[in-house]
Image (cartoon, rainbow, N blue to C red; front, side, top):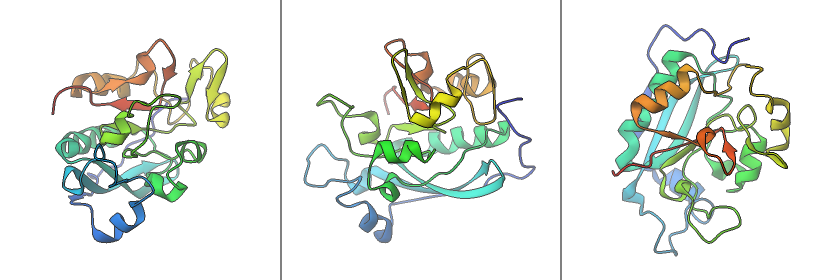
Length: 202
């Protein structure tokens, strides 16, 4: 079975705006912490409403990313649509109380979340709106002694390709490479198969 599904024949509808007041109220004190001077200002973030291919047809989702990265995010998600990569759901991490663990366990794909790298004082690239997690169950974070989320154990064998998985070699990772995104599945301290990050200057 392939990682991709037949892509829709039409182009996805994608809207990019400033973060609306109603969305800000959902995010304040959850994924956004204005009391921390390192937290991006609202003007530095963009709100995307977009079509994506789900596992059972076209769905509508939302994403918050760095405003300077919005056009590149639209380009990336448009390419994933064209390829036919199904995405389980695209919801703000605020719907999960800002918990990265809860969002991953729900197989949710998300981007901005002002948080630290687990176990460190360093800011995650998600805290800057520069990273996107895609299908964390089908593409878990993996080390020999640990897999996150727990449901990702069913996808630990990366040689058994199923819908929504991201593997190298493959067309999704080739798109990351072409468009300038770094894939966490290439890392060696741990394989972060759901993580894609813009690591270049903006």
